[in-house]
Amino acid sequence: SLTSLSMVKVEGQNFSAVPFGKSSEARAGEIVFGLLDDQRLLATSLVDISTSLTSDYRAEEYGHYWMIDSSVGSSSAPLVNASGELIGFADTSVTPLDHILPFVQSVLKDGYASYAGLGATIVDINQVINIDSALKMNQKEGALVISLPNGPAKTAGVKAFDLITAIDGVPVTSSNTIAIQLKRYVPGSKIKLTVVRSAISSEIEVTLGDYA
Figure 1: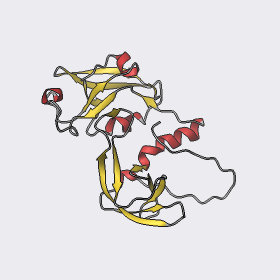
Figure 2: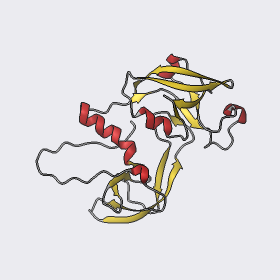
Figure 3: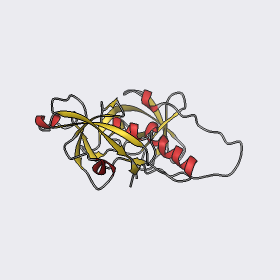
Figure 4: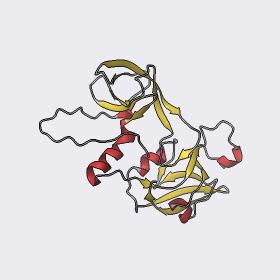
């Protein structure tokens, strides 16, 4: 699953709702507030908005999360900014709201979570210190394909150690670029990947599947 969150439908009227903020605008050092299980607010601050939890991960998953300077416990505590806007959920790390919105929108629209899947394990070439320079193929940015299960990318002709440099013309500038772009699509959508293989750039059309 791309998130550990669950949604619960509550019948009723005239509920108050917390406004959604833009988690993409959050910056390291910003003061935020976590709503704890006992309804207390814990003031804390973002100390890192680009912490890599692992060196390689599925293309649909975000490889970077926020960290905060105070623990809010083991549950997913809502995190709001100084304007009272929801910007994420925190436990041992923080998941920005922008990462979660596709899940919320999918459940509201279809009644269940549905994600477009590429089917590739990738690594950000700028996040791995000991990556072989030959694998970068003189590229400064991109996502290196580490492995391919049977899925959309493999079916389309993507190979291990291809370097993905763009998705539908959007440059892959960070480890989150592919995950962010995939949230714009639904299973069955067609996308074009720009890949570099043996120092030659080409485009590969991929029909996205269901993330599983």
